[in-house]
Image: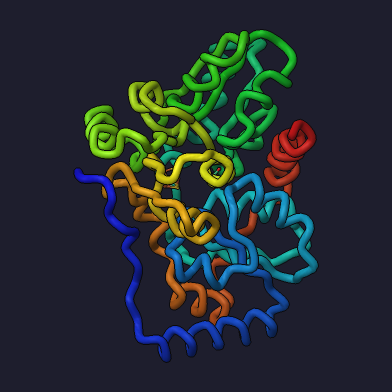
Length: 316
Ligand code: CIZ
Ligand code: SF4
């Protein structure tokens, strides 16, 4: 696929957009809510959010908010992480069925089996997991801190779940012995080495920046392998004028906003996460209006999952 396509946006008349935004703001006040959005959300959803970031930034931010409610524009595990950290706040997921296929690839029963198979190994879980899996883990990590988290764990052997590609990326940068669960992101897996080579041939001066959820052969061709917020910093600080981006294309909105003098090309138009794109201004509005899609974690699981998330927040 030819790189260079612009991020698809939902076109709507300005008056309709203004009315939706006004209604959302009104409900936000009524619920004493703060809206947070992941970097992969639709541009117009990012634009109504109080904070936009990666899952680590949003998890941290969620604990610092003076609010009674958090409206999370992202996927289920992210809202669940906010609920784990903020039992006193009502956490809404801004679209009821926005889930992450990778997070659903392993459940707590299977992780318990792996723990029996590798007794003595510590468990590091990617944040893209259910609360039950976090509760069975020693520590959580995100793509922004995975190497540091793995290095911080005592012991030599680590069970890493569920993203095998991120696990391989970490394994190449740590002395720990890593046992990798074979999970993956269906969206990032679509990017292949041929597409990266084609993009490079068309834009030879543009650094290639990809996410560690990409296949190892794709990561091997990149100039930098970074989490989404790290990508934004990298592109702002790097002297190059244009960049080839290998992650979910929602990230291009912030890149273009924060570095308007630079060009950003998504390497493949197939880098769209259908779950991230479920959230719309209408779903944000309906969620608040009907007070639905409240994410709750049973207290015993929440407390154990919180230990894994807190340990991560102490490391980085
Ligand atoms: O950790 C996150 O927010 C994800 C899923 C992507 C990234 O690297 O920001
Ligand atoms: Fe899950 Fe991949 Fe979508 Fe992220 S981009 S929410 S890892 S499916």
